[in-house]
Amino acid sequence: MPQYPFTAADLEALRQWDTPTICNALEVVAPHRRGHGFTVRPMTAVDPKLPPICGLARTGTQRAAFPSGRSKDADKAMRIAWYEYVADAALPTVVCLQDLDDTPGVGAFWGEVNSAVHQGLGAQGVVTNGSVRDLDMFAPGFQGIAGVVNPSHAHVHIVAVNVDATIHGMQVQHDDVVHADQHGAVVIPHDVVTKIPAAVDLLTRKEKVILDMVKTPGFNVTKLKEALSKSEDIH
Image 1: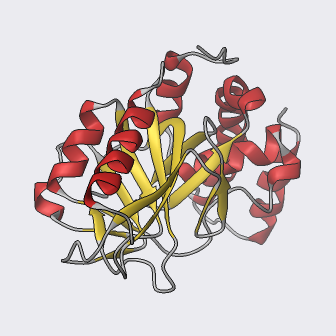
Image 2: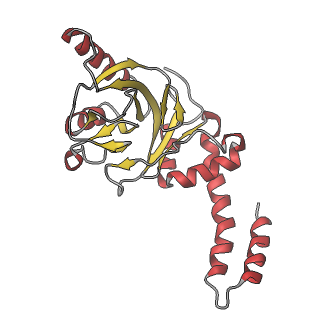
C-alpha cells in the first residue's frame, strides 16, 4: 500500500474546519496554491448541515446524455471496476467524478443506491460537476457536492477509472487529499496536510483581534487600524 505523510487521524482532524478555512490556511502553508486547486463555480450540497468531508481522491469520468456504445456486459464490467477502485484504499476517500457531457448533469449517477454503496466502500462523499438526485434518500452522513440536481439516470455510465479529473475548475488526481463542504472543494498537497492545524490556529488568533475590536463600544476606523496593526504582529 502507498505510504502517506499523514494518517487517517490527520485527515479526520481537518473535518473540524470548513473548506474556506482550509483555503485560508493553504494561503499560509502553500502560498503558490492561492489562485488554483479549488472549485470556482457554485455547487449544491445534498445536506448543507453535514460536517466537511476529507479524504483521498478516487477519480473518474462519466457521461449520461447518450448510451455508452458498449455491450451490457462491458458496461457492467466497467461499473464493477469502478467499485473495486473506490474500495481499494487504506484511508477514507472522497469520490471525484467528472461529468464529460456538453451539458453536465443530464443523468444522475448519485442517488439512494450509489450513495449507500460508496459509503459502504469507505467514501465520505462525492464531489462532481454532474448531478445528484434522491436528496431525501441519500445514505445518512454521505455528502454530495454537485453541479446540479436532476431527477433522471438518463444513460449514465462510467467512462474511465483512475484518471485525472477537472471539477468546476479544480484539477484532481488519484490519491490527492480533497476537502469539501457546502462551499465547494479544495485539493490539499500531501506535504502540508499536517501543517494545516497550526496555520488555522495562527489565522484564528489574528482574526480574533479584529473581531473583538469590532464588538467594542465606539468602534471606528481608528480602532480598526489599531486592530489591524496588532493582528499583523501575531506570528
